[in-house]
Amino acid sequence: MSDVTGSPDYRDVGLRFPDGFLIGSATASYQIEGAYDEDGRGASIWDTFSHTPGKVWNGDTGDVADDHYHRWEADLDLMQRLGLESYRFSIAWPRIQPTGRGPALEAGLAFYSRLVDGLLARGITPIATLYHWDLPQALEDEGGWTVRSTALAFADYARLVGEALGDRVAVWTTLNEPWCSAYLGYGSGAHAPGRTSPEAALRAVHHLNLAHGLAIEALREVVTNDPQYSVTLNLHVLRAEEGSGESGADAVRQIDAIANRAFTGPLLHGAYPADLFADTASITDWGFVQEGDLARIRQPLHVLGVNYYSTTLVRRWDGSSPRSMNDGHKDVGGSPWPGADDVEFLPQAGPYTEMGWNIDPSGLEELLMALHEEFPAQPLMITENGAAFADEVVLDDGTPRVHDPLRVDYLRRHFTAAHRALERGVDLRGYQVWSLLDNFEWGYGYSKRFGIVRVDYDTQERIPKDSSLWLARLITTRSIPSTEGL
Image 1 (cartoon, rainbow, N blue to C red):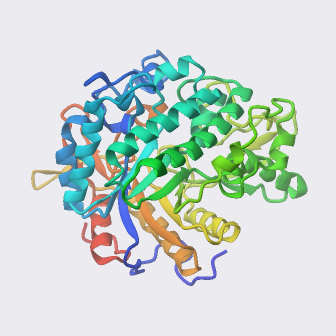
Image 2: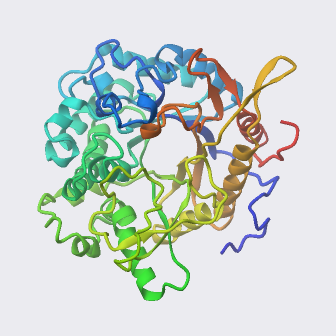
Image 3: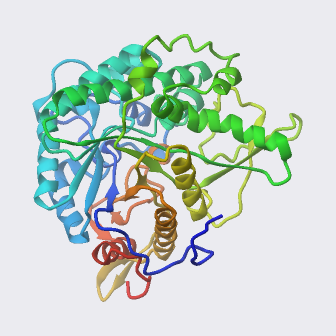
């Protein structure tokens, strides 16, 4: 599909990234911070969910995680040693407002203020995400993202954080992957709060979109520097089964409406797609979309965050054979695809990561090109890309090391895909590798390791993996390095 020459398997070397292209790494608050009940922090939906038996593998919780709340300074030193140019982190809403309402906790604001100051002191650009899934439980008790009041509360929260950090943060990201928040949280039940209602999922879609628009309006009222505004989407790269014809193409269309255009439509076009309304008419009349909402949702974005891990293969289900649901998500009984009960998700060719996701860097290039073609004036940034593999600690001359050649290869191929998109005219501003640290991987607990730095959860020791050394070399040279000599 690419008209840029290079290795057909995306294993290029020496490709140079332009100056100003921000290369760094990313984390999320609940996955790394720990300190779940310290300094007044309230309970989030993930605290409740992870403490509910059977919801998370091995009964794992984020109570301690990577203990980043206490070890943040050493973690920033580690980022500096790796040469990271940027760090994408998220702010825990219940650490700022324990119940999602009311005045800000000074201790919470102070923690993130120290974090931002520490990043700036080390020459690392702060990219702050306001919401990476840790909704205050008190707001969920009032209806969570299914009710409009949560979007209004989110705007108040954004204003409080903006007042405190709005002179120093370079990039504000409102939401991380609202698809997951809405569909996995309220539709499939695989994520907190664990609801399984198609109607609730669609209500959550709209109120998350609205929260984004209201938050940017609030930030603009209070920030004093000149930041960039963003939102991060996990857009699905959809492909129809070969030979499935018009029915396969229509399956792609329907899932594209649910997975992608339910967000890009209002955020970037100012309207929901008509076919989404038609496909879900038996579930809801979308009466929760009020006059003026779409204008507030469509805020100019300096950069659109793009998270990419794998591709998705679909076809129409015949209604009689066993339905294939290889959509990459835990099956706990509900569906993250409201109105699409006659679509099935097919297994794809390997290789695979430990998550069971197929590895296909061409999908990243395809996604970036598709966004560029639909929104040619919209700058993009890869805000998450990475892979979980079964890492092993070995001793090299008595020093603990993690040789992770599969992750290095994964990153090399996906950086190559990003570079090819740049060469084809995409306005791509940066690449944040997921994740800096091994961490709490949501419903999978501590069983999946995405980090370029290993964390020993018993001792909290950090061990930079070969992938982190490879990334440091890329940043230093600004070009894709070989994998030799790590």
